[in-house]
Image 1 (cartoon, rainbow, N blue to C red):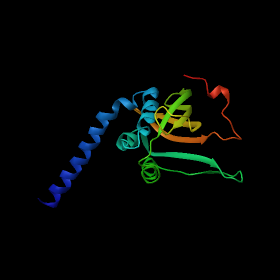
Image 2 (tube, rainbow, N blue to C red; image 1 turned 45 degrees about the vertical axis):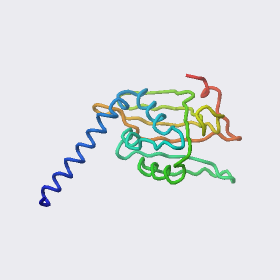
Image 3 (spheres, one colour; image 1 turned 180 degrees about the horizontal axis):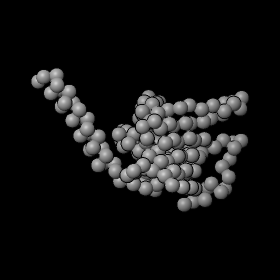
Image 4 (tube, one colour; image 1 turned 90 degrees about the vertical axis):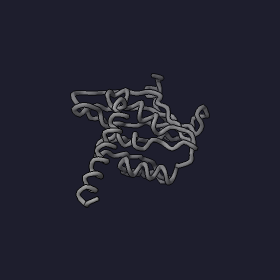
Length: 173
């Protein structure tokens, strides 16, 4: 096979695989409710089940960011920036083989035109029906493109002993 044919074949294979993901995951990005549900579903699961990372990445814009925050023991607020691909690598390295279940407890959604913001309270468990191990809030920014929604960023903070979640963010959906 000539180099041109090999390159053309590789190009067509990449396009086909992208279209295959688009068809498979298209339902996940048709509404705010769908993309928010898909985000929670795709990161949750038992220890022995690999997450569908292609589905996860498909939810995000090309230059999306995931931004966890935390306070150090001295009270300094720190944060990290991850691309969706960086998040996958971090998860596989640090949490792979661990059960993780995130449940949305409450959500406030504001939208205008082609943008939306979801302030989503979550609870995390390490067994499907086990005790809640931590809670916090995800601040999720969304963009409505021509035919779908994209996650632009997920910015989150866990609850702490010093900063408890206000009741208005704990009302069950």
